[in-house]
Image 1 (cartoon, one colour):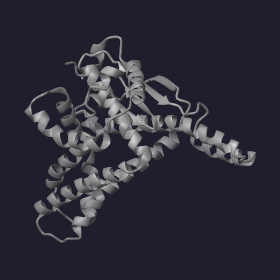
Image 2 (image 1 turned 180 degrees about the horizontal axis):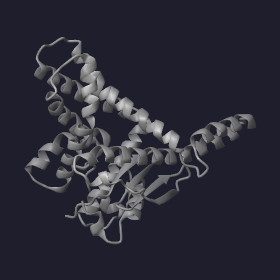
Image 3 (image 1 turned 30 degrees about the vertical axis):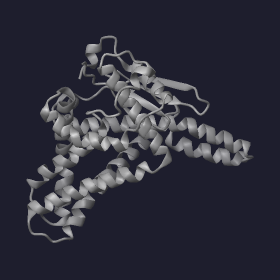
Length: 314
């Protein structure tokens, strides 16, 4: 079996695949055609090669690429809505106002401006930290338990419970259900490639929708590692606890990232144990796709495979 570093991200009616040198976005347009956009990846900083430190960097790097890709994929459905508006008799003034709003967030080449990306990433990080890091700490702090060990353990359990609840809640949304199906198509395609089979729709459909290197597994490992790391700083006032947790978050993300790399590279008992919870959560976030979704995944994947497959080795 060949392990590949190629990964991806599910989008609105599409998939982004990221290779060692290129990224490709395949989107199924409302008319049924697939549009493929391929670009060279921006150069990574040197920190991307330093163990532990590369974890937080890779998280932000991936987040920026995903936000751009989500905006690109959604734009095809914005166009459809605009066409429907025209058909419904919406006036020209409404269209001009809509165009002005889009111009505020997009640059001349049609991509999100750097300012819009910055604030989108900042908002995403703030919501994630607030919901999964600070909220559990605040709630457990209200219990006034003296034992730091018990407090940290309860905080970790609550954090995981919130994560499960969040996944269950967003899964109820119709559009998210389809995103989860594209997520499954992404994993199936990668699994098929790693099994050295030709990437055809028929072959890809045979493979499982789960993958050890999935972002869902990474998120679970972040929460699991945080229980251990946060225990070393004890339990203090709510404000001080929050400060410590924010400062230690890059370390937590870095350690979790290294564990994901180990789990993806080796097929032993340890890697199976640390991957098991994340693989279980993927039953919520990676669903069985249809053949059209797999077609998108294959198209995006093939576009980022380097001429020398060794360059994409995990």
